[in-house]
Length: 406
Picture 1 (cartoon, rainbow, N blue to C red):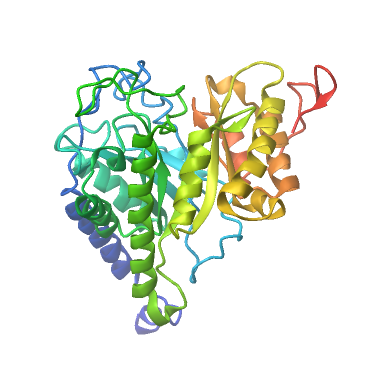
Picture 2 (spheres, rainbow, N blue to C red):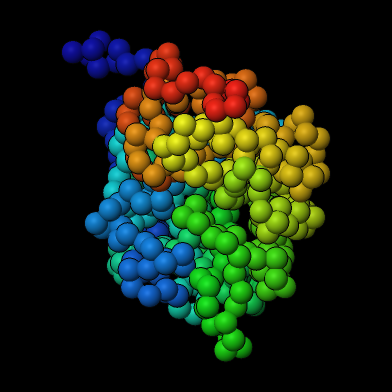
């Protein structure tokens, strides 16, 4: 019996201690995140049942709305702070704080997640979970605790299409910094993801006049190029720069471990990024923020040219991101993520997934993701590399006019 008791491999913790540590991590995260309030399902600044774009499906009825299925997360943090040009993980998963669990993501090997969205509360300067009912923060905390206990990392995603991003509503720089710092302190994440938003058309600000908005789709809304949008972008950039400097200072002699990484997720089309998205990147970089990667949310329907349009959007955004970030075009692919937004699960079959994975490998994209409708588990496993790609069978390799698919 004594020999069996001591046959455990040297350096390996007893199973009882591992289980105890996991339980403590879940409980500790839950207790901490209970302090982060939650916004009502309809958000604080939109009518019940509507989004800033005017058509939200309640999360409780259809958890896989575009917000629920959004997958925007950065890669697991390495022991040392990564170079800005270093590729991230091959797939990023997004978890809607108001949606259902996504066990198929962890089953496919995904270990890096963003959870969101963090939006402004009623006073404009208090962080809340969008779509989570009051006193629902414990469920969110439990999900985060389980993911971290299983070896995953969880990033907070600020902004999104429901509610308003803190920098757009909190005009006091000190309070805005405190709001961001509070979320970072509670979650202790490797980084933060930013999805800039703007108010719905006709929203009345403090001046009592309706604010103008640009075009907005289900993939999210970006600040317009109006002065108010630029001011919000500058407020946010100053906060991110401050938080990154603080993280680097804390890292000290650890070689950079613990540095706060920053990513952006922006809507894109065949013309690439919109002017406001490019401006947000430029302002953030000029404030001294190191932006690790930029994810592109590109609508993808069932049209025969859908994959081709996806590639066109990525190629159009490439030089725009290079200019905004001040890097050479050759280095941009490694700092880009591509997330097709599906209207239905059949929009992306195994054949399309294989070609999309090949496009990523051929161009050296940092990561892939899928938003909107939930893809099949086979598609997910192909995109994450958990399954071997299959031969394309559902769409022609050439689009009308002879354009090759990705």
